[in-house]
Image (cartoon, rainbow, N blue to C red):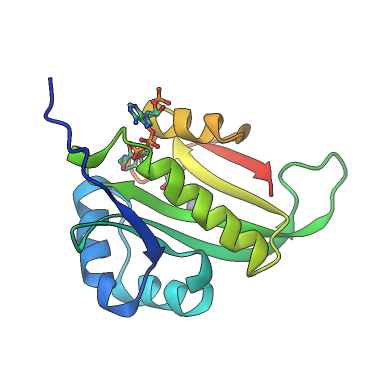
Length: 164
Ligand code: ACO
Ligand code: ZN
């Protein structure tokens, strides 16, 4: 049994001061890492959908979005839509399974829709990342397609999406 941390957490929009900590969480939890300017530009451009979770003034999770124009991942006929892209989401291990990941994603999806007018949301996830896939499916994301050898180590991704 792992020790579970169940203290109160709060969600708020990310700010520039959080980025070093967000990068640290990203490196500790995922093999897909990015240079500082990527985090910084996404915060500048899409900050209304970029959220952190905090416990006692410590950031312990984040969701980082981008807004893009492109072909719909969910509609039957090809149509150009505004899409929210969940670039990266993570919660530090001791704080998982408390609903924080789910609520980060919900907050980001609301920001995508309300602040940026996104019609739908999509993301890529490793096909073996069951905890993440389960969170996304519970939130109504569907597997749209498999992206072969999407990751550097050769693993496939599911592209998952839903309407907003
Ligand atoms: N008590 C018990 N279980 C709960 C509670 C609760 N109060 N609240 C939620 N849960 C369960 C959920 O039902 C869910 O269960 P399930 O696996 O049976 O569906 C599970 O806990 C996880 O849901 P959350 O708590 O909302 O999510 P969590 O905070 O654990 O974060 C995340 C999920 C972000 C995927 C986390 O596992 C993580 O950081 N993983 C490593 C990084 C990662 O893989 N990120 C995603 C990569 S893909 C991408 O970034 C686009
Ligand atoms: Zn992506």
